[in-house]
Length: 402
Image (cartoon, rainbow, N blue to C red; front, side, top):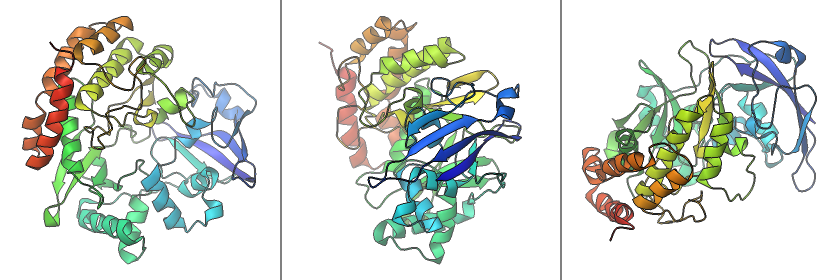
């Protein structure tokens, strides 16, 4: 049995003991029962809010689940994805039998993204920032390449293990701090066949031009012609605290292999957002952008809600790329198909779903995405990569035209 106290860091930096998590010993298949309950003190606190408005309402009693699946997905959200979990396991030397989600939460403690921290019962989180600095970028990118290549952990990796074990996603990345704030630094991978760093910077700039809210970002030049993409963290509050983050995967209770539509996301925002009249069109605009750019990696952990004094609102868009895997099919369905319609069909979906100004949104996004080659060249993406993705984007922009 693993028992953990669950702490919530507020926007002003104060920490509240929000709840208690208990996870039974895993069976032979690695599955275990879990239960969470809010503390009485948290339920009585006027600053308290549900960690998941759909699955964890502010009520006494236990919320029970298998693993950290529904209704406990908001707690699993605190863990990084593939790359960060790999580094977390290496950093703490966790054997195979201690690599389940509860053990990873215990190892992560309070160093993850978002506002949740997990400690042994009776212990308060110990503030500690493992972020690297700009001077460490060369070391970090070299360590990431070596770790990808041979899996070894030596002196050069220690910084990477500390700074890189919190961010999510499957690609090499690390937390970084400089004079202008906290960032997630994203590196190229030895498996890359194209300039993923330059293409992501291009996609973020196109999204900004298309009217999407995106985090501040910049490229940093490294030795050997390599580059790192720095993306500003949006889970940190101006007053020095944290914003609670909740994935749309958790909000929609989407475990395992799910089949969901963009319309389901818009419906969830209309139910749970503090500003549905703003967030529903924002999500629709991001859908149109994903469709026209070819961002097929549109899974539900690439959409998040942030909690502030207003309530839950849609986070800035992130992890945007053209169809680098050549999949064509998206994770989320456009009505009934994973293949996106053209601009006219996207506008029709918006009207069907009651999105105000859908046609105008499509025109604005199309005008921005049509500048792909221009913006990619500005970010020094290799000509061959520009030509490759420009063909797919042109096909998407012209789809449905006669």
